[in-house]
Length: 450
Image (cartoon, rainbow, N blue to C red; front, side):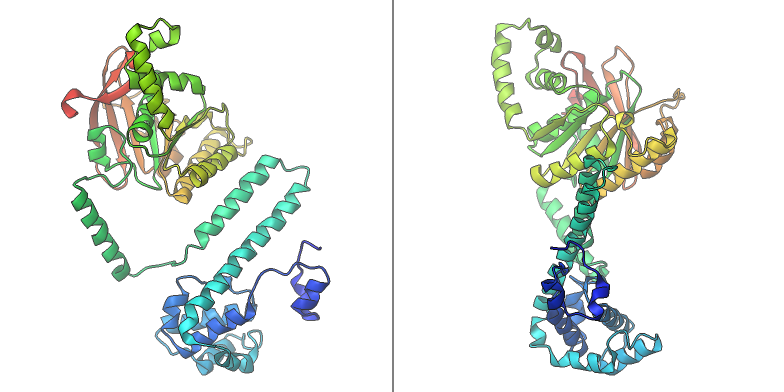
């Protein structure tokens, strides 16, 4: 069986003959394509239905694709789209012959079993289009598998990216009028009103921060910056623990610096209120054992996924993230931290490497439709006004890509701390007071906020 199909073979042989010769003909349904076009020529309102599923690129036949595009063009311009007007438009553009000629266009209206079944025909064309996209990806995978210069990880990453791209590109409606969006907005507003909560995203666990941001929003690229040893890992882990343990929301924590056992030790200390030093040394009190058992139960049930691969490659990180989103329904991802991610292209200058990572993670957040929270070190001396956006390492790209940027500010040896929200695309900026509990290596709300 030949893996690749040469469109040039169509000139002299039919699809059936090609199939018998051993060529894999890409999936398509010519009758369904012609039925869609015939229904459009008979009923202008049918376009509203087909555009929920189809674009011109979903048609296998080049002639059918062009006819569909011309019908859409005429109807959106307010003209009538019938046999005469479509043929005239194609002739004006010098495309009438390549679109099958006047006779072919005229024949389309006679092959429609029922205009009422237009949605059914459109779904058949759509399904074939998705299968053709998968067919193309499969052939590209085969080519790369036999290319010894390409690593298997790169093949997996590209395959996953392409498949998710199909999902993204085949979502249906490309645009919406306000009359379609306003009812959804009102519905969402009514739901929030009934819930009595201002949260529209995932709660961080810090009440004042959630009031300021309304929670971490889907598709947002979020950056938490801090100087070394201030506690950015402890802050992110405190947030992840609240989300996964308290709220039971699936979350992933990519730890590129600390191993999984070290992170679990912190989780045990924070959730059980057992001093982290006692957990580390094993000098536990008798009362600690019961606390450990109770904490073990809550951690065991928590949908928190830890990935502790040091110097993780960017394409491996994206691949793992897609897998977690698809199979574990993860709704938020934490990455600790930015400069420990290995870029795909290590030949780039350092600044350009960080820019590549930043843009890739921002794109990943939009692709997966979940917030991605990335920790980053601050690399410049802060001014008397505190840290600014340009204090982020390789700040140029991150400043531009990030939807929400916050800095953790705390003097070493002190418990009082602040989260300084310095950028928020959809809201205000400002300070949030929190407290650090060093014996439990975690941050919490101030007592007055609880």
